[in-house]
Length: 115
Image 1 (cartoon, rainbow, N blue to C red):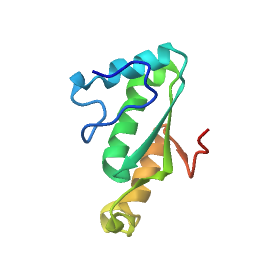
Image 2: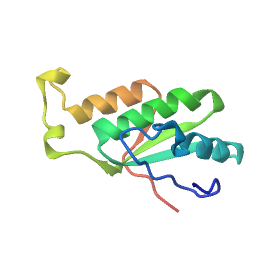
Image 3: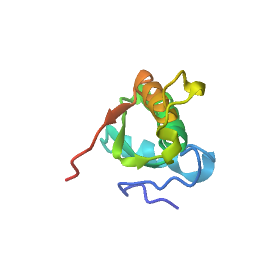
Image 4: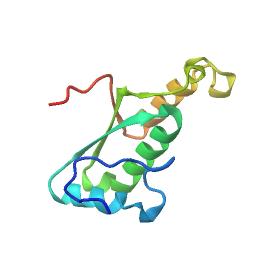
């Protein structure tokens, strides 16, 4: 369904890797084989879908030299997810997600300058 040469993939659910039949793995493998080494994520929700998709993509494709970047300027969350919470040790769910992604090797950019 997905053209392997297309420069983007639209995530159909909470995790871009699920269901396995959505074509993402094959699409990304074809992009890596064509010389792409950086994948930029943007969308919502930063502390849910974005976090899960970025972390699982890093885990699955790290050995192939893929850099996973989350562009924070095109990522968002519900307003309440920016408020401090005891569930996250006094940090916000968004701050906790950012810390987790950074700790697992996801690169975070305040804003990517698109060509």
